[in-house]
Amino acid sequence: MAERIILKATLADLPKIRERYPFIYLEHGRLEVDDSSIKWISAEREVIRLPAATIMTILLGPGTTVTHEVVKVLATLNTTVCWVGEDSLMFYAVGQTPSANTRNLKRQLELAADPVSSLRIAREMFLRRFPEAKVRNKELKELMVMEGGRIRELYERLAEKYFVAWRGRSYQPGKFELSDLTNQLITSCNAALYALISSILHALGLSPRIGFIHSGSPLPFVYDIADLYKADLVFDLAFSLTVEMAGIYNRLLVLERFRERVLDFDLMTKCPNDILDLLGLK
Image (cartoon, rainbow, N blue to C red; front, side, top):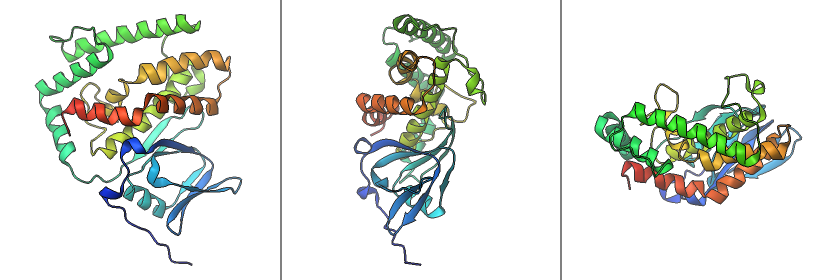
């Protein structure tokens, strides 16, 4: 067997988040290391070499196999690996990448542990979504009640805009096919957004498990940050695709349209900056 040459990248070698492609989705194939590069072998035996250093997140769908050596290389490059479902792009798990230091994580923990700073950040997150809201004296439970009402109003406006019959948000874990088309689209795009935000948080040395609004869930800080962008990247897209798909769910079209929105919105630049600003980090 030929000797494999793995070059360890330093922090200075890594491209900045805004210079990396947001994600690539793979299914039914195998990821291997060949010499000093990562290659994808599809079920049709097509071989594609991946520029892993310029990919922020790799989404592995059903039927994929990844070698131990690939994971080592991706961790070195700070490329996040997420395991997702097929039609619904359900977000199952994320592989954590090592951080250069714990400075940002320590600051996140300090802010979340202090009730005053934690509530201040929660209010700021709410204001970024609803700038006209009066939140100065609102506690977290009151903010969440206000949020629920405003999101329901947003759903109704989008349904009216795109002439979509809407009976409310409905999703049962593991029973994706029981939801109507619009709910399926929301679930799919949410899962893809969670994967991207998980990769950004890991790249910044922050924990997805330390949130300021959500709690009692696997990835509360991911959900906190994702809520900042769902109106633009998820909800509007879901209602517009409901009309375009005419009742038939098309997974490839969902991926294509979601990727286009992420790039047009410049999420990979905006999101890291928003997170650092919210937490007062450099």
